Length: 115
Image 1: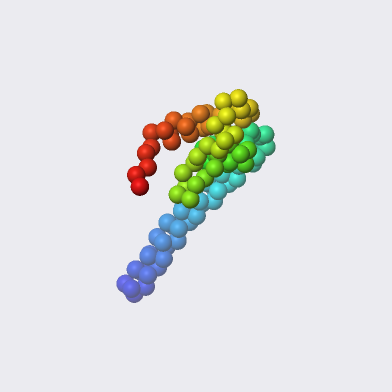
Image 2 (image 1 turned 90 degrees about the vertical axis):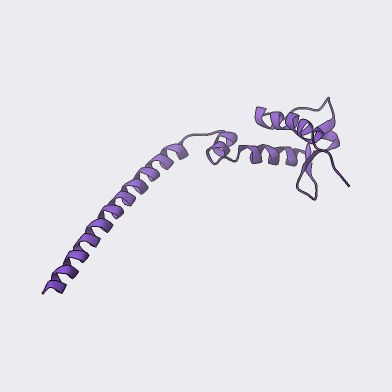
């Protein structure tokens, strides 16, 4: 009889614990869906959307790469192209790629290659 009481007690406690965990998960998922529904209704600028995922630098680098300002060498380092080095170039439309374009020469000037 004691084993049956112990088994029923363990089952009851486990069911109660998992019910609480399940309800908290369901509530959090419901809240997340509501927030994502509100955010998807907003018309965010692409860089703000990338910032939500912490990918704003990658998005700016991709725009500069597609625009022909940057080139990626075999080691994965970003180098300015001839168009990127041109002082009379038209800057990118958004301030984030423009700031990244200005930072690339400063970053590449500080590095030296040893052969």
